[in-house]
Image 1 (cartoon, rainbow, N blue to C red):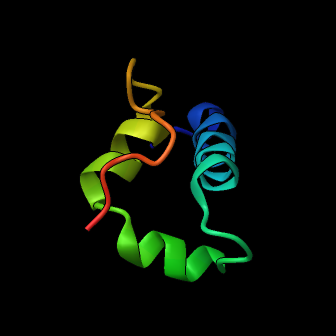
Image 2: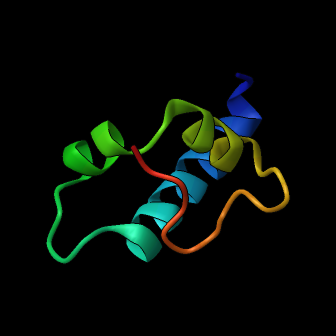
Length: 57
């Protein structure tokens, strides 16, 4: 990933976490239950990658 894309990717993942975390769920637990493919789509800014309550394991 290029440097100019890193901050927007991290920001997108954090925003997705804020919208989809369960209560006071820790970020690490959220990442464990979220499919890698979903996180990659969010980081890439793909359309439709930010559904509330996205697909989780």
